[in-house]
Image (cartoon, rainbow, N blue to C red; front, side, top):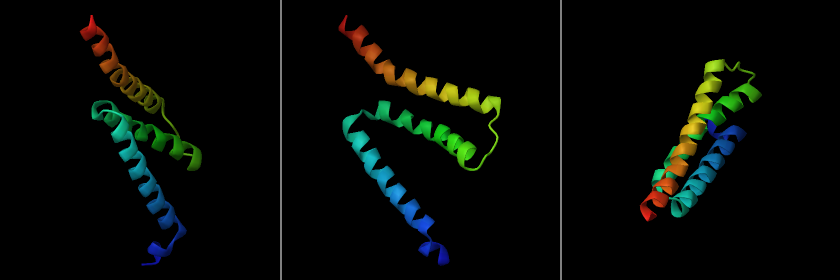
Length: 89
């Protein structure tokens, strides 16, 4: 019960609320096929926060995995643009 009165609990609830509002905003402006892969960037954000805030070591394979996630998100984001260009030809 004491955890419910913690300032961290308030920060957690506010960040969840902000995340929800931002996600709804993204979904109203971006097709789901482009928006959903962006959620994979959360893995990279968690890795960066654990490295900076908690001084956890980052292994080379984690860096490679993060780069692959970013590349995948980028490829998905440009895929529909590329398909539209080909369909207009």
